[in-house]
Image (cartoon, rainbow, N blue to C red; front, side):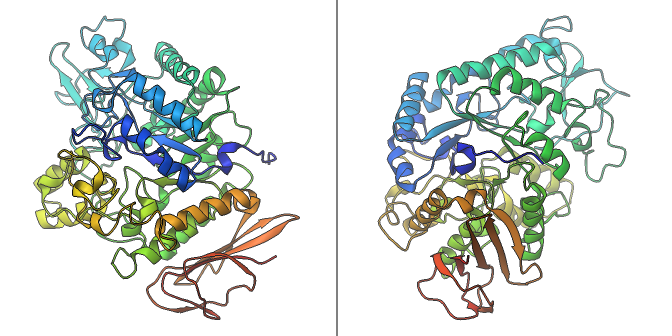
Length: 553
């Protein structure tokens, strides 16, 4: 076991901004860089240390910026490179670092590399992507795309198919080609030289594919599953180590890789303590606890037992070997308080604070998704026309068309799981469009913005926002929150999630969280109350959605 070293990114709290939905400065209904700059004081007040910026590169926006056509230019809707430079400088003035979203498993089909690649089979860029002949008059294999339909698109000009694990406008890059790696690493160094502070790496565990691209031998749905053949592929660690040598090492960067369907053992390799690959990874297990008849699409909510089992496994499994990232929601997940808590008017505030306590007191780097610090909820859209997400619309078409779900069942799934639940505009105040824009927003604002907004919370000492400030302050002040060992407690309790954080030779913290709307018995430790979402406590009881942090030794 490698001795754990102190790093700024271990002690930091990261705030994720989805630029399209954060703040619109010019009235076109789309968030932009100048909108972010205008709200940096808000983030400084919250106390966060870094911003993870979802993609702002030039893009035709088939998948809201995750289809990049130019890695060294800014999306027209978001502003200019001068706007970016000003935002970066203003963030740094406030002690806030900027982490870029690195999307290099695929590009847009409008990227210059792919434009060249599809011109002919002999083009020098042909091998930048995966081109294959048809098989038996059909696609080269049976893989399905994440966004519905086949993972292959036929190109008549050269009579071959190209691979796209996501949208047909997102062709996958061939990392086995050294020229691809050269181009990617050169681009990364360009951004580092500009002064950014790290990378969140989109689906980075998928960059190495099984060379044969074989069929899924036992498909369970309309198409085969590509994951066994692309996730943590044969050369992925070789490529990440090369990236580390050529870009990351010698720079003081936060690096986090998005790695779905990953094991503890693989995570230890990606985020190993000797830092030869990445600083940490995002794993998905705890947000994928309720598989439905067709993947994630279900209305079932996770149980505490399943959530605790998953979170505790990752906490103990990476202890001393690798670093955890802590999150409950992001741009790809529904709102945390709606998914894991209780978003009813009676319990929304209490449960939002309870969930924040549970997460931020664990070992790892916590990530706050924009609006989470306000207790923002799922969108509640009742019409398919309100949705904008390519995944939601494509899956609705496929699953309803195939009779897997009725339209009513699929709409209920979208209300629970759709990525658009997290993409509604940031709720700044109770004016029209929640203060997000003076124009028509690109996606509907949540109807509850008059009750849930930043203006109503920043000066309210009992608000969700103020509670997040207190959590962040506690993390910055108490080293046990960052470096203490995680020790599970009450692992069979049906209502309470509890654990300790033990800093050897210093002190111990105890955390208790009630996941129910009832009072529950809990013989919690005696000690100094450091933080709680209740002003008064009851001996041997936890009140509905109560959370309490105690110094017990």
